[in-house]
Length: 118
Image (cartoon, rainbow, N blue to C red):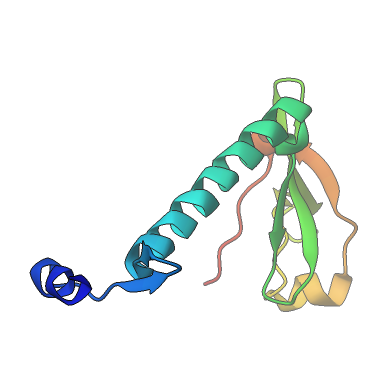
């Protein structure tokens, strides 16, 4: 009877102690579980205040704190460029930045000019 059921279903079904096991359904269940776990973790982190800081990893492998919330003012890491006198985001690809190795300070986002490669 099991052979007829397999042929009719057109799918490969394994039986463990008489219970039908389909690999596709197991993979789907694990995927849904991981997705749900991620959402629950993010919701808890937001409730506990862990979602206020954003951590990123740069290409050099250095983990830096890039954004913080200070009440309603959003702060970002910045350094003052001596050539232009403007606060800029860190630029590890810039030879001047690497040579000076400036101290980074937390500044309001609207006062900081973003540096892009190029």
